[in-house]
Length: 158
Length: 395
Image 1 (spheres, rainbow over the protein chains, first blue to last red):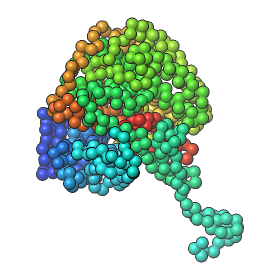
Image 2 (image 1 turned 30 degrees about the vertical axis):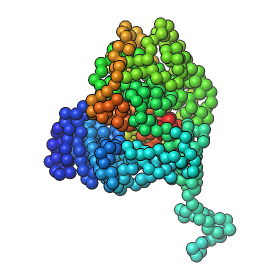
Image 3 (image 1 turned 135 degrees about the horizontal axis):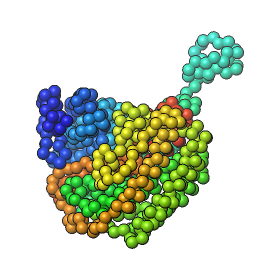
Image 4 (image 1 turned 90 degrees about the horizontal axis):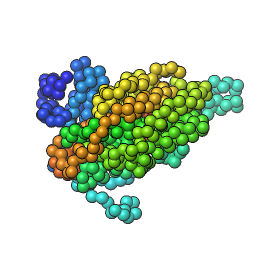
């Protein structure tokens, strides 16, 4: 299935939840609203024509224009086609629906995106920091992050 | 305890309680055991919080991050794209060549660079030598975890010879900075091809020797077969890759199925777990898949050495890397599985975002699924069978 066909069937099924698509990119992507991500994910995984059963990568993004985002690289081991899905949310209210119930691998990837970018995945079963210490302040991969001078009272030589 | 009358001699217990000979009812409880971060069988600094009921594992909660070195943050702060490569080296420090190759492939696709054939051949040789070296670490330490010390020495003795070849090529034994975007840092030294052929000839019979020593050893088979079974659908749902996925019976190898470099010119077969000693997807299957992959890698190296063309290995290296605004996700087959780089460019000379999807990070996340219900003593083998390198889990 080509990216265009995926986009058309998503648009037909979800209407306004599918915002736009960039089909002439190096790897075509489709933009979806964050509140309905899980529904879209379930459809993409279970529809017989799609069967995107393999989530290759889930990356958090800071676009440096007041928006955060999540990028999903999907692949189907059955049909061997790929698609890239994106969601965007405002930096002040960074809520995205979790897809860890759809693809098990998303659990840790989402924790990482939460840890480094502060994106909150609603309905995630265990949203904790994963790489940084639990008492770390701030989200280091945000573009406006400032390296702290002190960590627990100890000066950070940097 | 709760007022129920029990016979003095009754030892019959309900779940969650034990009756003593004096008729007392004792409540049993789950216990939490901590393993790591400093523990010889965690292969680095991994901490496992283990909930056990007697000797049966109820749950495992991995705690990672002890080796987090901010790869992604560093990558954003480089002054050019080539500078990311030494950091990529340090992710999976026992398979640094494969980490470099993944990044180089991603950047070349983004920049649409055609790499000279000689470069591709040398990369294949290096990547496969590195795969052997990395698998040797995996199976050697796996033996130690099962209580067999000698195979470890055999494995490291052979790995040493591969590291000698790397040292001869680029001066480094562990972290190479050898594969650059568009080319290589050095051409092969004149004696390399003979030495590498010599190695293949020497090494082939050693695989059988190693298998006799460890793989088909009765005690080893008893300890690993039917332990930590990972079913096919769970493996795909958790996006496992590499030997972990293939051992579960999925015939899937990125070198063949998402082609890059010149792997399509050589004759070789991806190896799949068949459940010869127990169930498909058990720990023994993971081990045998690695052993058979080593053999396939020797095949590839021999063919590549025979067909290596002439050329300038630095001809296609761009003077200044400034990709157009855009993004790419490229994946290659590292010894542990799919190493993917998601690189976003904003049109400047530094990356806007680099996300590394490292195979061991993803493979480790399935550990709780495959350890529940296992014996506590088997957890060491299950974790070793996943073959984690914490440098790459934590990045």
